[in-house]
Structures are given as structure tokens and as C-alpha cells.
Amino acid sequence: MQTLTPDLLLYAYASGLFPMANDRDDPSIYWIEPRRRGILPLDEFHASKSLRKVIRQGRFEIMVDQMFPAVIDACAGPAPDRPRTWLNDELIRLYVELFGRGYAHSVETWREGRLVGGLYGVALGAAFFGESMFSRERDASKVALAALIDILRAGGFQLLDTQFITDHLRQFGTVEVSRTAYQRLLKRALQQPAVFQGLPGGGESNAAWPLPVGGIGSSQSTTQRS
Image (cartoon, rainbow, N blue to C red; front, side, top):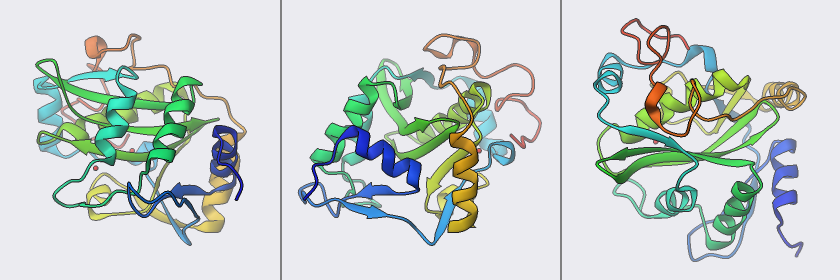
């Protein structure tokens, strides 16, 4: 069996595939290419009135790439609605390596010095492949997703791949596209440059986020993509 390496993992993403394991303790890794792919168009992200209120309140501090190993470990842990995980130790090791090489990133929500939610994914060209999210407090992962949208838009990204579509993701504007349509979007995004540059305004914490005008935190309904 071919040894899975960070370079092979990047090649798979660029080809439209992503890896999954059956369980944390199962060493087998499978390549998935859904017939219908979930994507969240960056200009169609929908933040509910209640989520915009939480963001304006500043209940959570947002940080980027500060605790990537802790974020992916939390994503791999069991949850009430997800007793099993698709991440095994080998995949975790590979994503941590990609993080060290600048391809994987985490957006984290903190409260009173504690990591309470977040998400991680892989950036390649102008495509961001959202992998998983977790939440230890209400709305923590939703706020991380809203911050991710601003980050991707500010960095020139064109595609946010959610892999599958769920009721949870559908509320934010996630849609399904055919495999052919996804491949077309992916090819276009991979040909364009983008920078995962942290939060809009610079820096690794939320000093300049949410944006005061036109950003996710605006009181206006947003059409800007756990």
C-alpha cells in the first residue's frame, strides 16, 4: 500500500479527492469523491440575526493558527451528535505536517483564555477545503465560520469546499453542485493566487474584527460563506 505523505494529500485535494477513516482507531484511509459536492459560495454566506448579535457582542476572541494541534484533536474527539470520528492518528499527523508547511490553518474561538471552538482546513491556490469544526460553547463554531468567511474574502479565495451538505451547513448558504461543476470550480480556483493572511486588518487576534462596515458583524443582512 502506498505510504500517504503530505504531498500526496495535497495532490488528492487538487484532484477533487479527500481522505476519511472509519474511526479514530481504524488505520485504514479511504479516498472520497462525492457525486454531489457541498460548497459555500463566499458571496452568499448567510449569518442569522442571532449570530450577528453574538458577533457584535464580542463574546468570543478570534485567533488564527495559534493552537492548530489542539483544534484538530478537538475535532477528532467524540461529540453527542457524533460518537465516531473520521479522523485517525495518521490523518491527524499529516494535517499537522501540512500546518507546519503553511497549507493547513485553524480559526479558533476563545473565551476567558480557553479554547471553546474552532475549525480547520487546507488552503491550496484560491481554494479552501473546510475539514471539520467543533464547539464547546453555544455559537463558538458558528463565530469561527463567520470569521473564516472574512479571512477568505480578504485573502482572495474563490472556493470554500464543505465536502458534504448538512442541515447545519445549509443554514449558512451551503449548496450542492455536481462533480463536474465542482471540478470546474476547483480548476479555476487552483489557478489563482490567494493568501490566508489571518484576520482582516492584520494580526492573529480579533483586534480588528468584526469589520465595522460591511463585514459579517454588520447589522445589515449579509450576502457575503459545525
